[in-house]
Amino acid sequence: MFRKKRSGELTFIAPSTKFSGDTEFTAEAMIAGELVGTILSSHNITIEPGGLIEGKLQCSELRVSGTFKGKLTCEKLNITGSGLVDGEVNCQSMEIFEGGQFVGMRVRDNVDFLPSNTDNKKVINHQKSNDDIEDAELSIS
Image (cartoon, rainbow, N blue to C red):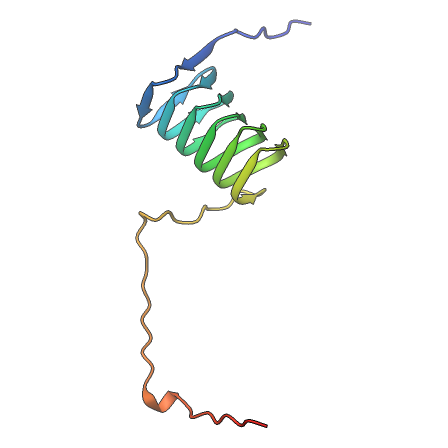
């Protein structure tokens, strides 16, 4: 009988504005500038043409008309004709319009993301001795 009314709140990051670090949105957000870092939201986020989010993002729904680079976890991803998503995406639903670009990997289950280039890497060196190499003969017919 009583419905929860939408609050109408919106956070807007204007063009030529840049934020970096950990960010949490408590309402819908529209990004026309740059946002770099870890971003959390239980609401929808829209990246406008010319806008950029780079880093790790968790939100309800992401609509990309600008650029997203990084690791994304959301329920629904929508890439418009001018949008670019480059990275690892964990979502239940994905829609890409003509002209939209998705470069990366998509998973639908909760899994650990691949380590980034800055994570510690294990290097394995295996040296072959000359005894391991066999001589080959080439015959020409």
